[in-house]
Image (cartoon, rainbow, N blue to C red; front, side, top):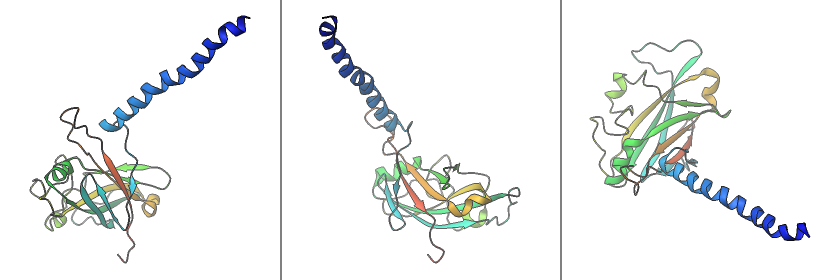
Amino acid sequence: MWKRLHLPWIAGIVVLLPVSLGGPWVLENQEWKETGAIPPDPVPAEGGTASVSGSEWGLGAVVVDEYFDTEPPPPGITLVDAVFKASPSDERSAELLKTCSFQAVGDDGRIWETSSEYATRSALEDEGFVFPGFLGCTDPEGELLKPGDTGNFVASFLVPEDAVDSLRFRVDVDTGLGEDESDPPAPEAAVFDTPDEEN
């Protein structure tokens, strides 16, 4: 009799407990994604291009060990430059380009952030290439790109020699300015394979 009296309560707990625990987690998970606390899943680039937060991105080349007039890194470390092009579709996407960030990803899961150590190579700057920093992805004067214009960006990484051949490159750009709750950062991301040498 005791079991019959308590069975509905037990059944209710079994049903409600996952809902009461899982519901808040789902809502919090969504909030974390909107704020960027949880990185978005990157979309694979198709044909070397991808649309990220209203801008068209392309990985034009990956260049290894081009130091020009600077000192090379320590032995065992390789300088890798991923040369991107980005073209915003409108003024908002041009402003969002200020939030761009890059990562190099190895096939074993290792991740490298960009390095600013080689961001002063004048030979590249003279050609109009921009090393994104605090200003994000802007023109060489630090101004926003105009809609339809194309910016050339160099993301530099210092990686172990054994990782160079397996690298893929990730671009993240916010979809919102994050100035208030109605416009959360909610970043988007794309991942690019290293272009073939003949391209």
